[in-house]
Amino acid sequence: MAQAGAGPVPGGLHGFAPALTSFVGRASEVDEVAALLGQYRLLTVTGPGGVGKTRLAAEVARRVAGRFADGVWLVELATVPEPALVPSAVAVALGVPQAPGMSIVDSLAGVLARQQLLLVIDNCEHVLTAVAELCGALRLAVAAASPRPERTGELAGEPGPPARGRRRGQPRPCHGP
Image 1 (cartoon, rainbow, N blue to C red):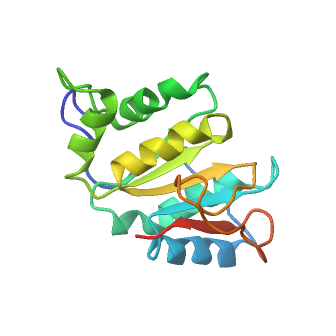
Image 2: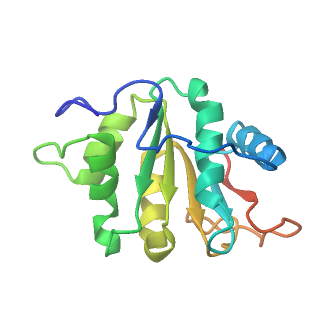
């Protein structure tokens, strides 16, 4: 993990459990999400509980980790009880301390402005507005997993047309680069 005050440790996967089983039958979805991450800054993977959104995001993270010099980071928000705690949860996961005289969001933005990383946010449906606001402030690549289907611009905090023609559990682009 990161040293105090240093920010994220460069390269690799951070916060992801090792894959203990093979990932069979979803190669096309992994390919699609990996390709979309080259085109969009923010993606959501939606579908009902248990379809494998988190596992899909983890497989994509493994596939694309080499594209991000400062690594791919998982932030699990299932245990974050209220929206106001989202920035702190992200800062803790990344090892970014709050700078004196700055908000935690400004501290994150200051450190991450110098970083090239992918942030994978899992279980964010109960704090969606706070995640959208933070993503807008940070301006980095984000993949989010949520059981709740969202409008394509909703997580990014920008209007967008409803996504149509996608199967459940498939990614949808939320925001351009």
